[in-house]
Length: 157
Image (cartoon, rainbow, N blue to C red; front, side, top):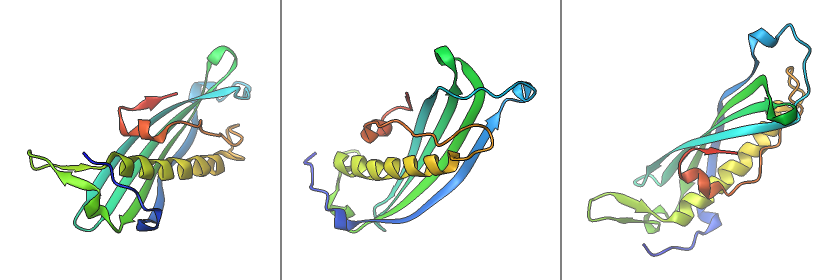
């Protein structure tokens, strides 16, 4: 498929919704002293939906983070987040082709661009959601990754 140039002025982020935000500590650890996390492990997944007739795209990001102590030990603290991004793409009709199978095949650069915007925004949301949290997460900074990798299989880091 021929790659098309993405024009940033044609992309409009209409709405960002946090539909899940929870930070929990395992109940069996509630009577033990809280250990400050040394690091975090992350798992990511996403769902995308395209409405080519309306020029709309929805991306849902799912983030699971787990606090780790020394030697990557599990501290029994985890956060789960779900964030939805709704976009309007003015020139979406130039960014897909119809295959012989009748399916629409979107330009790779469109997915990578939208995922970059979504992941970058999610990093700020997660940082804000975890600052001053009651369970010892003091501003979790998600790793810098290639957001296009989120378009593939679920990602862990």
